[in-house]
Structure formats: C-alpha cells, structure tokens
Length: 541
Picture 1 (tube, one colour):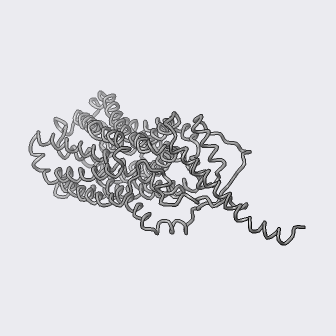
Picture 2 (cartoon, rainbow, N blue to C red):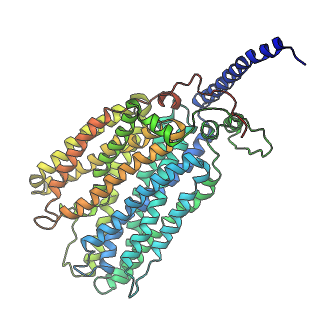
Picture 3 (cartoon, one colour):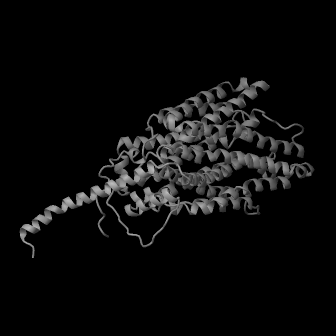
C-alpha cells in the first residue's frame, strides 16, 4: 500500500500528465491542419473540384433553363396572348429560390451535425428526381400543370440549395490555403457553363423541332410541348453522371477532427488522401476522441454574440442578399428584358407559327449571347486574381461597377432604346453587368462564407448566408413581376434597373464588414485561439 506521501505525489503529478497530453494532442492537431494547408496541388484536388463543379453545372442549368422554358410553356398552356399569366410566370420562377432557401438552411445545418460526406449526394438525388418529375408533369381536370411544375421546382430547389453549403465547405476544407480561392472559384464557375448549356440545349431543341413548329397550326402547342420537356429533362443527365462520385467523396478531415473530435482518424485520413488520393475506412481503427469546443445552442450564441464574429455573418449574409436581388432579377427575366428593348424581335404577324419559332429561337440565342459575353468571362477573371488581389477587393470593385452600370441603364434607358445603336449599347452594358456580377460579388459571396467561420459552424453559417441571398432572389422575383408592367407592358424596366443600382451601392458598405481571407488558414479566420484548442483526451462516455 502506497504511503500518504506517495499518494500525494501522484495526485500532484496528475495535472501535469493531463497538461502534457493536452499539449501533444493540440500540437498533433495543428500539425495535421498545416499538412492540409501546405499540401501541393494534386489529382485529389482536381477530383474534388470536378465532382463539386458538376453539381453547380447542374444547379445553374436547372435554375436558369426556366427562363427559356417559361416562354415555351406560354405557347402550350398560356390562355391569354399565348403566354403565362404574371402569377403563373412568377410561380414557376420563384418556386426554386424558395426551395433553395429551405435547402440551404436545412443541409447547411445537417452537414455540421451529421457530416459533409453523409449529406453529399443526397441533395443531388433530390434534384434528379424533381427534374425528372417536371419533364413528365401533366395536366388533369383537377390539377393544373403549372401548379405541378411549381411543386416539383420547389423540391428541386431544396436539393439545389443543399448543394451550395456542401460544395463550398468540402472544397474549402480540402484545399491548401495558397490555392483555396481558385479551387472554390473553379467550382462556382461551373454555374456559368450551366447557364450556357441551358441556352445551347434550347437552341438545339428548337432547331430540331423547326419543321414541326412551322407546319403545326398556331401556336404550335404540340411540338413546343416537346421542346420544353426536353430542355428541362436533360438537366438530369449531368446529375446522374456525378451521383456516384458524390457518394464516394471522403469525409473532410476537419469535420472528423473538430466535430467528431476523432484526432487519430483525421490524421490517418489526411495521410491517405494526400498521399494516394483515396479514403480508407478501417472499422477496427482505434478511436481517439479529444476534448475541444463543441457545437451547441449556448456555444453558437456565445460565438456569434461577439461583434468580431457577428459582423462577418452580417456582412456575408447581406452582401449575398443584395447581389441576388440583381443577379436573379436579371437571370430569370432576361427574356423579358430582351423583349422590352426589342432585341432580336421576331418578324411577321404574331399569330403565325413562324413567329413562334423565331421568338423561341431568339430567346435562346439572346441568353446564349449573355452567357458568352458576360457570365462565363466574369467567373474566370475572378479565378485569375482571387488569390492575388484577395476576395474583398474583388467584391468591392464588383459592387461599385454594378452600381454605375445599373444607374446608367436605368437613368439613360429611354435614350438608349430610342435608336438601334442605343439598343446595342444597352445590350453591351447588360453584358458588362453580367461580367461584373461574376468578376465580383456573385463569386466572392460564395467563397468567403466557406472560409470565414469555425468548422463546427462553417456549413451552418454558409447556409444562412446563402439563404439570405435566396431571400433576395425571392423578393426580386416578386418585385419584378409586380412592378414590370406598371405604366404599360415592360414599362417599368428602367426603374427596376435604378432599384438594382441602389442595392449594389448598399453591397459596397456590407463588404466593409468582411475580413480578407486570402492566404490565411481556415482556423486563423475562425477568430479562435488555436493554441490550446484541444484540451486533452475526452472522457470516456
């Protein structure tokens, strides 16, 4: 039996042992994170980029194809003037952003609770089913097809919404800090190719049914019915291709380390992924959990009650809100705006099948021009400079340029559209606005929320920021549909441009709340002390 002195000595040495163990575990965590942050660019990073990119390609295709499909639906199911009523058009356009909002909040939260890997692919399955459902939607005495499409587009929106936080977080948590901005931008840039693909497919299906449309009695409802179903339904294809790869993406080591608090598994995952690009699951591996900050309502409130953290969430949320007011206001209504300025107007009598064909073809080509001339170049301009200039300068520059461009398009609207050359100038300014949306806040509002919060709240905060953006998109769609025809058909477009300019100006000020995130580790950006973050081994439960 040990003497009292020996017992006292052991008792006094126990805190030292715990402290020593804490220090070792804390250093192991920081070393493991440094290994991710300083890893050279590899094929694994390419795989993550491609898998996430296909999702965003599909998202954009599914969201913006409705801009073209709405015109087609008008010829098939419109009862007045061969176009959808303002409420029908609003319903099918606003359903997806409303679903996005729900999906971003839901999946953002679930990814922080259950894991990125468990949720990744679930949202894609929802998108595939809902897209297929739209393409097969039918009319019945008791059910309006427009109502059915609205329901399916809401469900699809939930899946698309889930893709935003998941793809952003998985990209950022696997990326090295030197190339994180470019990796995340490359993922998001797939959105531009998705919009481009929707326009290309639109051109192809309309051209494929040209003879059928021209031969059919006005308004060529049967062949046009085929065109919109093909346009929407083909959005399933990239999603199906990506599904397998989504389900095989490994869990991020940061989730395993900081949320599951399994340091041993996280260290092994980092070694496997960086060395071989593969993820090995060993059911017999030793589980070594550590004591570290854990997500809870109290902890969430404590973290975001600090102004230095809350202002970042306000900045990311409002910046995304302001941006999406204009981005979706234009993106889902470009056909209306092109019609309002009489760009590429069809020739001949409006009650002929030839007019139907020309109108559909011009809508598709107009959207194609906007994608090539503004949207796609803007993403890749950001890609080239985001890790050199930084996120904040790009966002500030974008909001300032958009304020100027929308002000010109709004206040000079009548003069610009009085002549053919003025109309062409308006289209140029419109393309330039699309360019600076993407070479600016549309990209950075996606990147910054994926970097600026601690791992245990990163996906949730990203979901809140993204959902704020979609709230802006919903308000924009409702406002656009309500205001656009005040004073005559499309007469209020110029004032809508002026309203967009005001929101872009407010985005300048919200950007000032944000930190610069370039070349900084995710842990540094979390505003939490990383020395002593791990407080020792977790008590056995």
